[in-house]
Image (cartoon, rainbow, N blue to C red; front, top):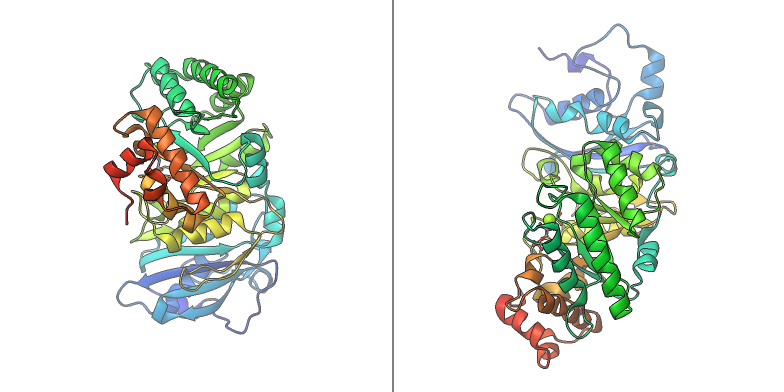
Length: 437
Ligand code: CAP
Ligand code: MG
């Protein structure tokens, strides 16, 4: 039975959204037997004040103050834009906000598919969220890298090395050859505290190596240790150990941890840079079916206060996501004011001075594609590669230098093959993997 025609109506193309409205862009297909317009009505209802039938408990006051408005329907593109009054939400409760506008609607059976393409958040929500503690400028200052991308590697194998071996791989990556070592060594997302590589031993050994390399080279070196744990107290204990050992960054697997853990961790004001790995985001963001775009997640993580966020590689690496998608992400985490882009299906966003998040380009990268990554994503990135460093025919130490050299070429704009002529480390990497042209 379908009563939606007798119910409260939400379609109102003449409505002028207020500055304080939350605006959502939804893309959907209906199951057979249902009109496109019905989809928007049901979406608006289920994500706000309504339900599947007319209810006696609804009153004019609720309808007048809390009813969202479907302000645009573009059936040929499958798009509906809905403006929600801010009174529907608790402005500093991201989980609550998402339970409305990214909640039950993704399970509605009249829909064949649904994507939450973008959410435009008003100032009142941005102001209620912590945002990054450090942002791009702070990250650069702490990591002492200016004017170029930060270079890094993820220790590989992802899991399997002992803590002693892990620290040794770190030593090689940070040192490189001839003083050309990487800035960053990072734990992989699934390395936590395994029996053969327990967290505390790994931290002590790796930070000891980090300190040694810093005094040997006079260069600042950064270790991104993964503190992800489903027990928040244990995560905080790991945070404290890193601080005690002189670490400045903590890595969180932000999707598997959940929004509440990320928000709570940020509100602890630990002073640590938060590196956000997005493992599992594909289950939420990757079409087809019922999805929430990575753009929405990226905006949420900026508000919750991460400083560094994985956003893909503009098509250069192994993960799904081309330049259009990556650049929409980069724009929305790095700029203060972002224009709407109909091709990328984005609404635009004002950030009202919230600090920018530095983009992390990772996943299947190797030295030959670094110029392409920098061309698309700019210099304000962490450019990191696991396989593309440790897979170098001469090992991690030489591989690390190849990454550094390719980054130098990318920044100066020199042709990579030419730059490699008198640099065997880079030359060998280019011979092995090419330049992805
Ligand atoms: C990269 C990486 C990251 C991916 C995740 C990996 O290693 O450590 O987890 O970057 O994807 O294990 O794949 P490689 P994304 O350089 O060896 O590929 O950054 O898109 O979230
Ligand atoms: Mg990884």
